[in-house]
Image 1 (cartoon, rainbow, N blue to C red):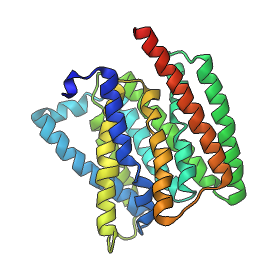
Image 2 (tube, one colour):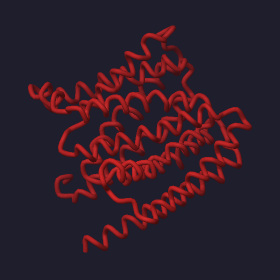
Image 3 (tube, rainbow, N blue to C red):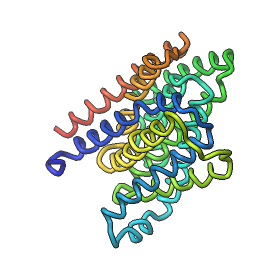
Image 4 (cartoon, rainbow, N blue to C red):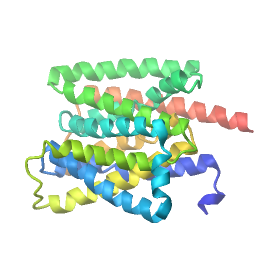
Length: 292
């Protein structure tokens, strides 16, 4: 059935399902009681082994060849993927969940800028207008975070968005190459890096359930789907689906632990979401008109 879908439908379906699995991630991070480096270790190690087994079953004897085919693009992907995995956790633990996810929502705009520079995909006036609006909205949120002492978390959230934008463009640039092996190695890099800072590997209480569930459902499965999606649709389109996490992530957190974002974050977030949604709608509509 999947084979009968168009590339647009395949990419959109993969991105949608992947991001829906991610939406409870912030809640699980908040509910876990382990430290930053312990969390990073498990979020690297468990998905690494989970997806590695899947790749070995899929590629069988050709796995080593698939790994060697990633080339220099795959190496850059490993670096960027590892970095934004680390910065995401640091951001969540140093600011409101809503702030982090709003920063992540900037990924489509950043993808468009990077695509213009490196992939020579021209950025139109609508995109530059959207970038201008989102930039000032983020500045508004940053100013509020400085007042509240959350600026560190917001900055790391912005770095995460930049990493996602780089990942999507790399996957788009090398769409004939399977970069899932790169993502697997990226998870291993995260686990090894965190290993040297872990004080205690022991999991107890609800963490015995929360941490493995989070690592498989919200990390392992989504990163495979989101890594494959740019092979079928553009990088900005893939990152557009992360708006679902921006909307649903804080809702899960608010419903369970009653964490509320500031008024400035809500205002800035609404402006960013509306701007990116409108821009993406117009871009997709324009693409459909051309295809017809």
